[in-house]
Image 1 (spheres, rainbow over the protein chains, first blue to last red):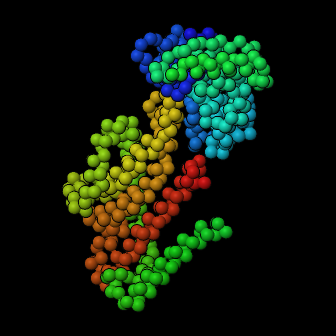
Image 2: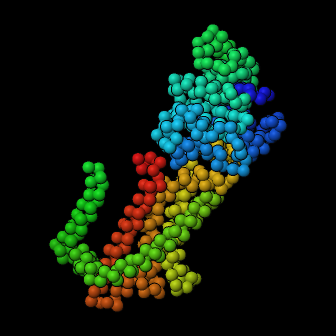
Image 3: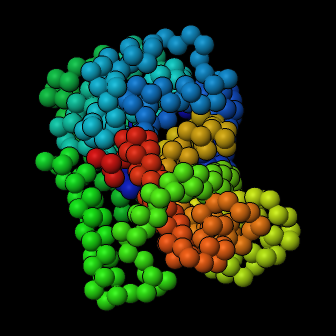
Length: 228
Length: 254
């Protein structure tokens, strides 16, 4: 159960079913038992009304579209369900992810981190109340990863968007989340849920505080307890 | 330097080829029915340029109409096949059958079926190019990024939106590649069917009726071959130019 505006991270090793769970919430995969509801609606309904912003693992940019038109791609599709008065224009979002100068560039001209920033802008452009992110920074180098999680923290903070974030990075889980759901593999199950009591907005510097170290240690212990 | 090479190298190649051809015919005294020297072809061509120009245009029209119909059909059929593994596998042997059966043999039947106008010519050009283009369309559409498909699914994209925003652009590189093969097959089929049709215009029609002009038969025959080849090269250049423009984003054009 996610509270509105909450950021929940699904943290666990490969094969624990965290991506499958995310795909179920996105309505891309059906559930065998149990039900999922988004604002009281079934995932298929939320999907049809574009109330879910999805950020896949690879940036999945269309190479024939410019950065700007990649960022607006999800608005161009299923137009009837697009927001009529979005809170931010695509150009504003590109400015927020520092890509204004690259709005007319093509994906092959961008670095991996820049490509995934377009992926974020594309998801935020929908103005959806729920964002689902499937290890979006997994393919990036450590330095870019850190920048990306700080950027994502900045983007989500003022919007009150609910975020479900899948990762196997403890630092990402600790920095971004209000609550971390630790999962284990074979069989895939939830080990425990750990609330992250760090104040918002979170500045990158908190990653050097004792409280942050304590949380990452706690998450690591919990992950190890779940592994056979 | 690069630019110079790009325009200069093909010209050197062509001129070198023509010179070797001319030399071969003269040195070995090849009979003109077997192979005509390029100098004789050019003499014939410039003796009646209007005649060859008009007939080349007619052949170009037949071929382009046939290929255009084939392209549209292959995109429609290819999109359907690309969306279902089962239908693709079911269609595979049929397409191969279209590709390998000797159309030379059954063109007479096509004429009986479609009558004596240009319809059989257009049909054969379209029919022979169709399997090649369809393979290209299906392969290209299958190459669309799976995570982009997921992304479109996450906003409930309609099938036509997946086609238009993702699958068709993703298929373009492979369509351009196969279009070159389709052009070769389609042009040969056009030349052949013009010759077997009841039409009297078009390069194939002239080339197959050279016995009406016994004195210059070899000249006329080889000049139609020359014009057909030139037509193929011009269309090939047009395809390459279009490709450079349409696929600026693609790795092959960088």
